[in-house]
Length: 256
Image 1 (tube, rainbow, N blue to C red):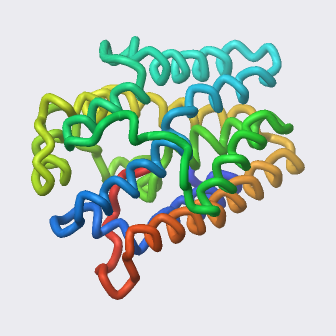
Image 2: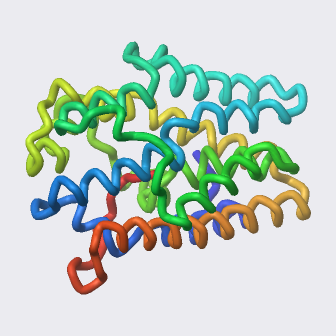
């Protein structure tokens, strides 16, 4: 059990409670055009999906000889880059197969014409993933980037992410946008392994963030990440032609 009364955990959970964006409901219901979907997914891929294994490797590279931390990060990296734990494939590759399922050519997914906030967030993630203290870099990637607004409920055991074919069948891209279930291997892989990665992330935090100065760096890094992520999501929503008036109250959806 993760002690949610730990001061650093308390502060990070308060941050994760805010990791939602007003544009999310538009992505969970019908009504978006193909151009709007492409803008969203192009930004997701180029900003962090494609290079997430690299970000993990950069963070792991500065971890001192702590077997538990290195083991957890190595497993995470192995899954992201190879799909070895979920018996699938590299997650960036699975993302592109999902896009092909939606009818988008993979050559559309490059770094061209990203909104400025996406460029800024991407550059910042690359820099902070290799910045000291290592605990802040690891928390940034494994708690903030990989985590969601459901973090508190997952730790409490009151939220269970859908897995396997149930997750695929109920996914908005299948329900509303015609993506064939056969292209949804990324969703299956996430369902198979994300629970253990969430547990590892919080266990590393509890075990190795005991110094007040390090704890402050961890929280401040994730605070900065939240602000930059919100600006990134605002920029993408603007490119999609969305406004807050187009959406309802954000649902609690698991999204990076």
